[in-house]
Length: 191
Image 1 (tube, rainbow, N blue to C red):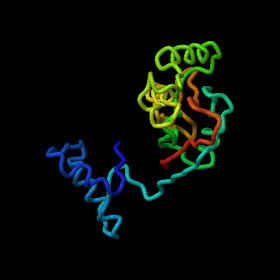
Image 2: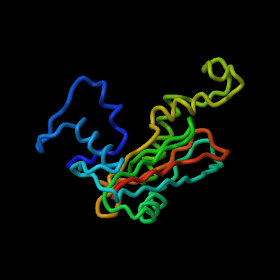
Image 3: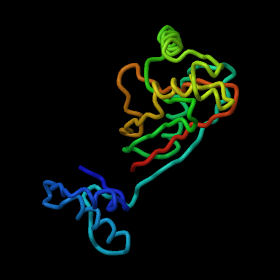
Image 4: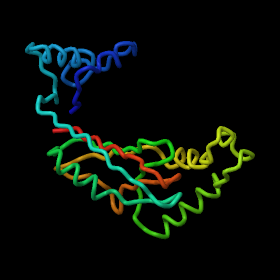
């Protein structure tokens, strides 16, 4: 079943292709129906429910080390509980360009391997010779590269009110230019 949110019409209007669904309706018609319903009309959309819930929460970290990883799974699980969402999606993203959120195993050897590997790929070097970004007066060009490698965000399905992880999966905040406050956004939507 596909759930369509209100306001997606503009996203699909210019695509030049209308997909048909088993119900016989098209995605564009389903979206138009949801818009009519939002204005008080009687149109219905398969999978649409007026009981959609959402939650926005931020976490703030000030990591004393230049590079470190912090398991934030329990904080995200608590946000899911607070949201009351039973079926939906949970987005977790770093709100800074020298930090990351990623999913992996909570195993210290793996974390040490990541730190070594990232330092080999983008070594810390505050001088302006290696990185042009450091010619601006900054000294954190390596942190921008490390964030690009590790990624900005994760999206995890919520099933029966819980994060729907595979074996050993945990959510981590990755810091690559620490010693100052940075935020992580948790956004949960569903029913």
